[in-house]
Length: 486
Ligand code: NDP
Image (cartoon, rainbow, N blue to C red; front, side, top):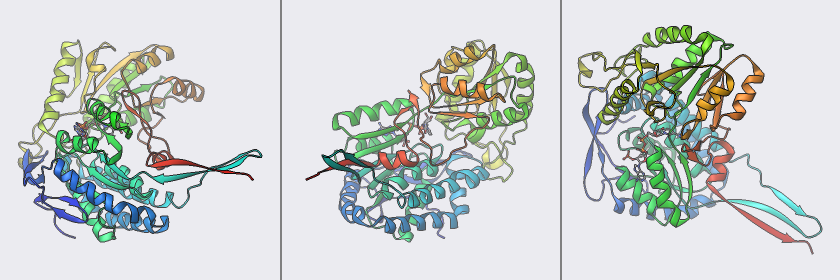
């Protein structure tokens, strides 16, 4: 097991190479506010090199039997699992997330992504359609060529591997761009790919900023498939770049997710689940339930108990085993959170918990980016704080009177990513789930993510679905072969 590097190079054609312009960006540890490594600041020329490598690798890789591709992906999964501790530590340092979260959620999920798609390709079925007396049709699903995979900083390896695994499993080659804020585990993944025997050029990773590397990927005519996860504003730019080139695009974007608690809910479970969905990863998960709606009859009790539980979350150095709330990813994100907490107060909100940066947990983290779990009450439902994505440890809690009213509140935003409903009334659960405009509705749970289910958002939360069969379909081109009956 090698140590984490001081300089993060690009990975092209199986080699770790410097960016052509020789430029680097500081890679800052959020918990300390200090650079601890440097990451390649690449540009279009580096993307061109990666495209050449991916193009060369495509034919042999796509022609390899699925069973052979599967074996290599399974080896990648095994090697990440072998190095789980190294990956978890790197993810925690790079993002500021608690090491226990990286160890139990992010890295195991990356392992699962590779295993899932490695085995999924061994169990596919092709459709056949008989046209009575005329012809026999079957559907070929073939890899599309080079896939561009762009991911955000909040769940770096979790999300990048959720794209890389299906893209290459079905026979595409790939060019991936992690967020330049959190590049370390993508680099470690490349080391693992070499050890697993992934042929050169099948996976290429280009580091750098969105406007340089991300835009070069979306604009490149030879990269015909784009899977993007990130903010809605960036998603719009990606869509604009891809549309004139007729690229196949999947956009997984932001959210402002409602978390609805009915008076008939199991309150202990609803409070525990809601605290988790509000503050996991410091609220920096696209699926976090940032708008909590509570039925009037239990509102006061819920708020008191929610605040009591949230105030017990252990804040600290992300590398401390006991920490439950780590650091915010960077200063810009911390400033954005502070801006929204100020705005909430101008809009009439009252801070019931937090609302500030706590004292640094230790000397090492004196200059780190921390913000306390924050609860805001008394806000009108339709204010900016309740409509715009904050992406931090900030939730608003609001009362509602009845089912119809809360469904209206839940849907009254631009976003439509996910929602949670807490109730013990099964009929109500079905009724509400049917009427909420989100890609996922969780009932009495949150973040249960079966790899087989379709995943994605409605409205401004995205276009298309990935996950399971949807991902296999997204990364392939269906072709109808029609054979006449003589
Ligand atoms: P961004 O949209 O800022 O960035 C996402 C990725 O896109 C990064 O790699 C970024 O690079 C890159 N990028 C930036 N500009 C461009 C461009 N013009 N062309 C192509 N790529 C570009 O999102 P964040 O990294 O800030 O992540 C947070 C957002 O992601 C939140 O809105 C969150 O809701 C959303 N998200 C959605 C998920 C979902 O499944 N729906 C899951 C997780 C997060 P760089 O880092 O250099 O800016």
